[in-house]
Length: 217
Image 1 (cartoon, rainbow, N blue to C red):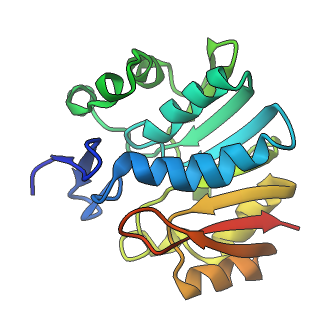
Image 2 (image 1 turned 180 degrees about the horizontal axis):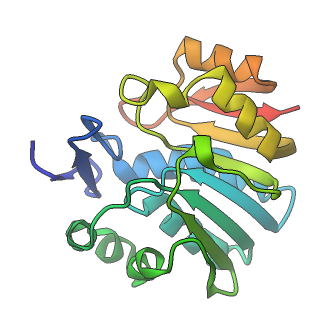
Image 3 (image 1 turned 30 degrees about the vertical axis):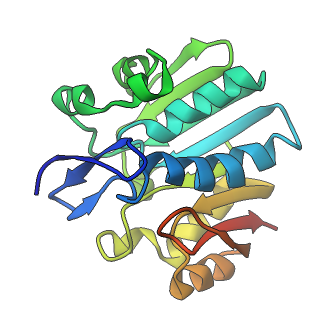
């Protein structure tokens, strides 16, 4: 399968042969990011506070982080964005992506070129910490208001969709914090509930009937 694919909304995604999955929904990469992580996550959380600590599981192409950065600028937020990615994409792959053209920005390269394992101020609204590590091996004393759970699908990464993993995330999440994800399978919802989250099903984007927002209580 070709590495690059244009999704139905005109935004690019990449194919991972290791996980036999695309990084984004082929029905719409931007649609997915906007609905799952921005509308249900960031926009909802910024009704409560203007300084938000985010943990992203799966930096991937950088689209979620890029749109979050642009939203932070537009809404005068301060975002502390920690992202985990054990398998970063290559410099060649980055050049294939059309996000800067589509979103009229030059900030995607800045996100990808920042050093790993350091906190970098991209601008006064967005502080990025990239960790080349798996969620299983990740430890921190920080606590997060919002978790973007964007791992590959359970069929490809079943070890990341378990109650044990969601308990770890719950421990990293403040009371009232959100976890948002595109996957609404019943066993995923049960695992989230078992880990101490209240699970909400929400209308999805094109090609996806339901998506999930889970609230730590």
